[in-house]
Length: 195
Image (cartoon, rainbow, N blue to C red):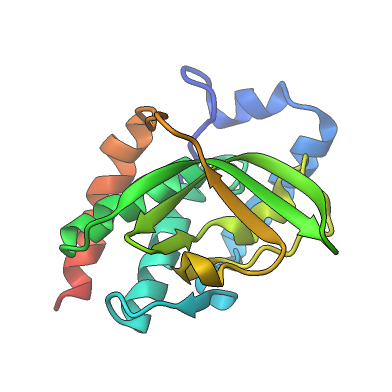
């Protein structure tokens, strides 16, 4: 099992030793799921309302990206930028024009906002791909009540209880794990989709 530490120059175990007990418990559970092959996949709960590519490719692509970014020690709940960057690059390989959107995701319950966070997603013209939200429950800052299924479709059909507000003039930051580790592997996976 490959694990990538969130801290540069520090092993995953050394980083984990500096974290509070609740983080260590979370990581223990994530590691157990990884070893047993039972980590959740976005395709399992995806709300798919797109006509871009095929349903099989959309699901397989989201799952392949999720598996890669889940190599982060603490799982993929806070890996939305990396997830979106990889999806954007994959769509470009397929000839689908897309862009990374950065901004704020807001979640509501009966019209009342219950949580907001800085988030990243992908835009394809009038469509949005918010593909990494199913792991929000592992984010220790988010309320347990949020049930945010991954979504791929027209922005006007985004699930009730969720709003995405894009920030103007914000560019994605560089991530060496995306460039040097995950993108080369995802590119090979994409080649298999085309066979």
